[in-house]
Image 1 (cartoon, rainbow, N blue to C red):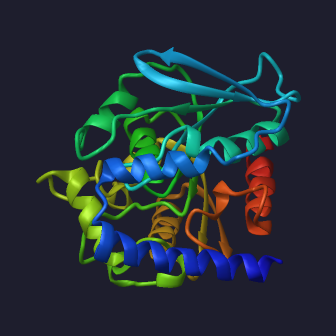
Image 2: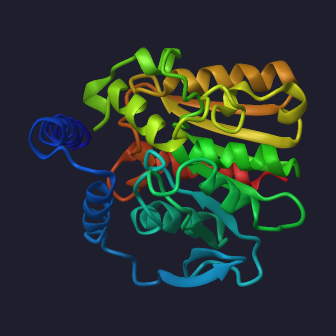
Amino acid sequence: MSDLLHQVISGYHQAVRTLRKEVLDASPSQWRLAADTVARLYIAPKDLRIERFDWQGMPTECIRRASTKEDAKPIIWIHGGGFAFCSPRTHRAAASAISKVTQRPVWLPEYPLAPEHPYPAALNALTHIQQDGPMDIIGDSAGGNLALSWGLRRSAQDRLLLLSPWLDLRVDAHSAKMNAAAHSAFDREDLREYASLYLKGHSPTQEDCSPVLASDVALRGIQSVYIESSKSELLHSDSLAFTKRCQDAGVSVEHRIEDSAHHGWCLFPDLLPEAKRSVEHMARFLANP
């Protein structure tokens, strides 16, 4: 069943690339609508509770399960989507799974998206949140970039969980030259396009934009890092490079590697065995003091 599902996903990715580039020429706003429409197909568990609130100026969705302890410290999830699409809705399934196993609420901030709100709008919106003490912050793909950049700005000994993070926005970096087409709806040309929409003329060599370039001193403002990536996905090299940066800076880091998984696999814990593994490993990391 798993092999068949992977074949279906690969075929879907190839079809999406063809339609998007040769037929639809879809804009970021159209991608947002498509992603949210697909997310509505998620069949939520009966004990899922969703609350929306204003977190110091940031619209935020709180995910809870029946097992969630009322006084538990929240886990913050910064969603991915090329800095330009996706939303708390697209990440409910994964957040719900994490909430269940950790017995903690998961907060999904709705940060401003490019190209309407390019760098540094999203990062500044997160930075305006005044939260004392260390936090547990998850970020996937472009959300991993924002999560790490935010953690570096905070320098509050946060614990970071980075899932297939996009940490290097330079178009000549190794990650921009790879092309694992079967394992992503996007390719290296998309990296250039979405980096351009987000940067809007800013240099990709700024540490806020490509946090893999952060100094050792800045990295030591983070308590520990958990990273996941797949050997077959477009952004694997970013995870390898950042793992080495953490090791060189003396920052505690755990890098878990899947042999063959689709970019964004962590978002489908109800369907993919590798996503179930991700939830289990993240829960173990979060359970450590």
